[in-house]
Length: 181
Image 1 (cartoon, rainbow, N blue to C red):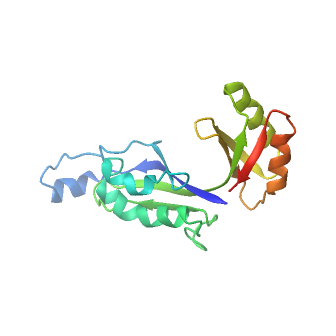
Image 2 (image 1 turned 135 degrees about the vertical axis):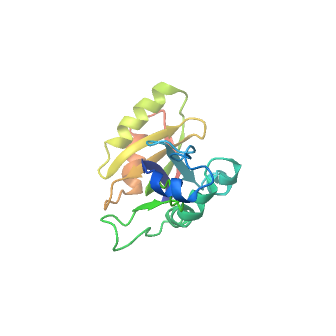
Image 3 (image 1 turned 60 degrees about the vertical axis):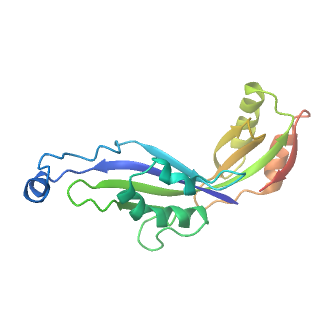
């Protein structure tokens, strides 16, 4: 089982009375860095490690200071907030800016990587995506032609057998599974 972390900006606040009382620029306004609906996916698989690249302008330093521990926990497959939220794979957190906080939803995404031989283009991707999504316990599938694999995301509380994924792919004679991580 592999893990990604999805961070979504779900709200922004602006406390103008605090800005007027305490800031050098009393009309600073809401956070200019993030917009509601912004999504960021962090991963650490197959040569990708977007967690360590956040210093390249992808995140505000104040926000990163607050949410990075939850992202790291999710990428390791851990419980982000056991007993606090109704899903231990999810956390709601905000940045430290007391006059214009940004609220984030942080989610652990559990998935399996199915390495597939024989994929040649978008038609192959569509066929394989549909076949893998039909497997019980699968939430959705992202076929990565550039990597020659499919990322099979698992529903909360479900398990998916590797053999079921292999059968879904190899029912078509042009494809074979090289491995499942």
